[in-house]
Length: 245
Image 1 (tube, one colour):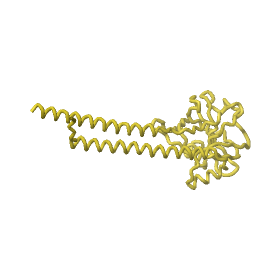
Image 2 (image 1 turned 120 degrees about the vertical axis):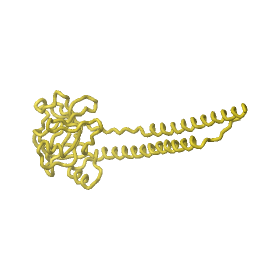
Image 3 (image 1 turned 45 degrees about the horizontal axis):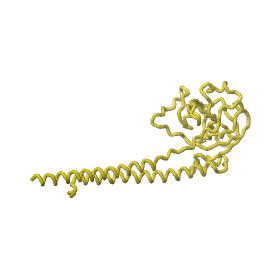
Image 4 (image 1 turned 135 degrees about the horizontal axis):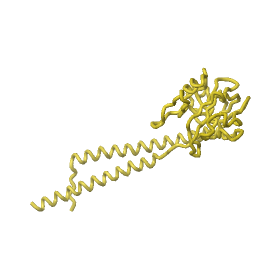
């Protein structure tokens, strides 16, 4: 016979912990649904026909989401003002992304991420073939200012050390009075000489929320099991104590 009489405080504490664990599991399921919706939304933007750069700027200023929207523009590169942002290639190789101001035929200049170069090709004079001159058309995906992570150091414009996108900081560093509040990551159209290597936009979203949810729910099951085992042990000890008396 199993004597089971729940103790007050262990039961109260177990119920509080159980509610917390179940709440965390449900929160992760909600986060998973949000992430799946975000992924579907981004995929629909990436596959949409390109819009004009001016249209993208207007939409951004009106508060519409334009991240990863394809856009196209005609204008000229201001190569003498390029910025080298430390970043890996999509294949994981260390190096730099070349951000060059691009002056459209109308509207403000915009910083264009022309793509990746290895460390030995950081300086413009080592890849002169790729410095396209004159009127040209570019196409890419709209990006916005970057949000530095916990382990990302701050930009140091004085030393030319850049780790994340910031259109205001970049404009001030190269003495541009006006730039668009967005960026353009160029597509993988090959540049003369092969560098910079475009098509460096990472479109990948980590979605481990289901695993996290199962972990929290699993801990809830374990908690209930430990609680029941503890209470059963307490019950057996109580029965043994009575028999001995």
